[in-house]
Image (cartoon, rainbow, N blue to C red):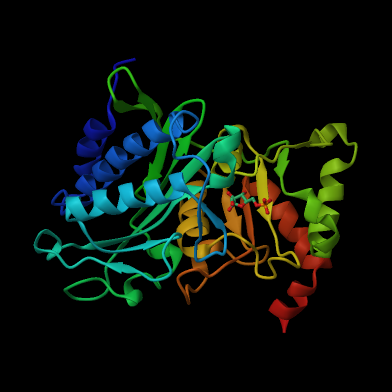
Length: 341
Ligand code: P6P
């Protein structure tokens, strides 16, 4: 198959947007460049002194790994240099990062990013990922504002993730399907490897941290037992696969079929994952690939974004599996009562 690089693909697809003047194309290319730099460091993390902790904790109260900081700095630098965004929101930063530079004066977009999701896995050589979400700014001019980020997931212009695993892949959507690119280190280019990705409507994998079982909503407990029942006709029991790195679990389920659930727990009464820069971009991608993403009751992309680091429960993956899990939530979970009232 003729190799098509990310850059060639973006230019080709730009023609689909007659009014596009190339800003989004340049922004996607900027992300690809930063991803290659982060991948290079992730790949040698065991060899250079960037392992271990900085001794600081981020806004999530999580110990910050040096590679977290490095990845955050790389993406912020790429966005500032590219001039296409007027503000950035990052998992690593309490507040938004307004960009007020000459080259960003006419920037049309803002980016929300989780620069290195699952970073606690770096030291044990497990895949980690970057997740990004792009919105058109709502503010009229100057540096971007908080208002530019408090937009529903349905307003996203583009979303994607990078997975730093056995290979480095970039998967993104601009609302016209999902395409996956694999980094070819020999030429230093992301090459189209998974055109027009579609996720199976059914799967036989469920991904959830069962260590929290006692504190799950009843609907989740019932769904887990459903997954574990013997039933040849529906290929149950399903397989339990949980890497502890959401991008890796959701990427595998996107390709093979499956469901990933991070429900409410006592430790995370609103769920653990963040709506703005984890759940919304992942939901946009999975829906574009034919899957579903809800909070157990409501479509993720329809949820109101009220604050930057807002958390939400997440049920995401094969459409029929998400529907089944929602049936159990509707029947057995107290939140259903709350939603009904
Ligand atoms: P737990 C990583 O911190 C993350 O946000 C997701 O990538 C991952 O699936 C989840 O949290 C792991 O959380 O509580 O199961 O260790």
